[in-house]
Length: 95
Image 1 (cartoon, rainbow, N blue to C red):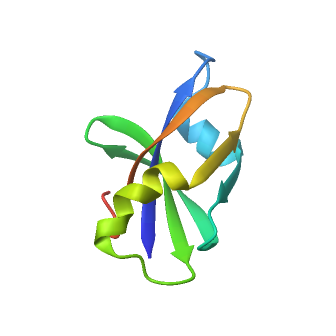
Image 2 (image 1 turned 90 degrees about the vertical axis):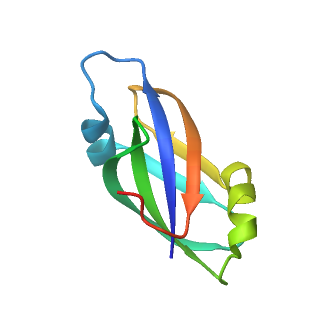
Image 3 (image 1 turned 180 degrees about the vertical axis):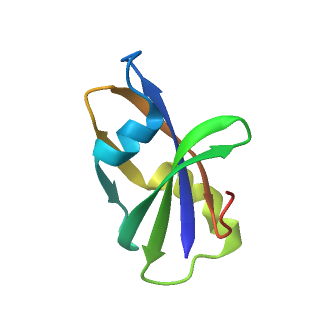
């Protein structure tokens, strides 16, 4: 099991990240990714992030985790989201 932490910029002052987590559509793409689950909102080193649990076809070596940050394509669909960045992919849940 892997965990992905996504920082999200909001363009709507009335929206919060918990609302985005409840109401957003999300798509994650990677050749080894079989399934994912949005677990909710968490704090990662002072960054409020969406936390995803990832299921991969095969185990990923620890040395390859950093490469997944740029390799996994993440799309978030919510009118309040202006941008997003993958902050971390880890084999340990950070929250």
